[in-house]
Amino acid sequence: MRAFWSDPYLWLHLAGLATVPLWLEICLLGLAVGDPVLPVWLEVLLVAGVGIVPILWMQWQKPFCIFSLLFLSVAPIHMTEGQRRLLRLFKGSFNQLLAIPVAVGLLVVLWQLYLRAPLVASVAPFDGQRWFGLGLAAIAFFFANLFTQVPVSVLGVMVANDAKVNRQEPYPTERIGKDFTLLGIRLKRILPMPESVVVPTPSSTLAATDGESPSPDTSVVTSAEVPHQTEVAESSISESSTLLSDQPEEGTVQPEGTESPLEISEDELALAVDTLYSSEPSTKEDAETTEPTVDTPPDA
Image (cartoon, rainbow, N blue to C red):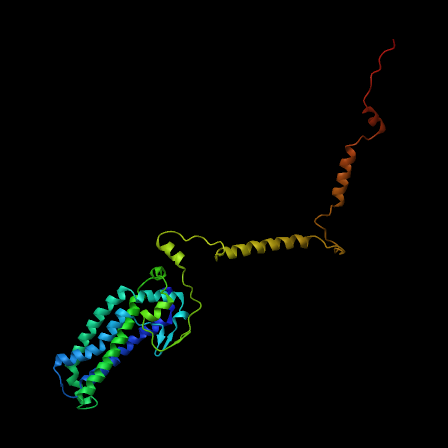
């Protein structure tokens, strides 16, 4: 899963695609009202012009800003850096080209609805009011285009990977209101943003993309180093506590039958004394023989 997919505004506007069948059904009912008062091609062109042209122009000139909801929108100064990077993709040429086949496809759908409108004429409301029916069909087709073009543009952005998103320069805050369609009251925040998701930094992502390993950060301790350092510290503490516990504390009396690790037994003490005395002269004579003799010169 890509990191920027956690943005709730992407999924919110992508879900708008589910309302398109409802708008197309309303458009069908509007086309079924009354009898045609204009040539067929002109009526189709009228409904298509109202529904397709404004949305297509918007996606080409001032794309719809997805960080909005109904008549509320996030103020540009409160948009995050990641959101402004996404706006750079919405303004890209890929989404502009993507809007053309979507508009052509919806025009084909409108033609099919017009041909099948007589089949539902018996259940169409406002019987006999053709102009009202055409107006209803045009408005419904307008929203069908809106809730198709915007989700498709969201899909065009969501297919990008994290590296491509991080390569984008954040859109200038002062240009967002001029280059994008922002509707309604501008607020600091509308939907809560997830705090547990960490977006990779551009430097590390670019280095990984170019085949270079990201520069190590000495201020960051990896998860593998923390347990190792903890084990070393714990072992050092346990060894120190063992040495301290083996030595008796001052002012304490050891229980009988126990020996201190520094205490010498009586046999060992006796053996050491015998060895010491055996190395010294046993008698005074032996000591005298050890003194050096000095030769006296003969009398003259």
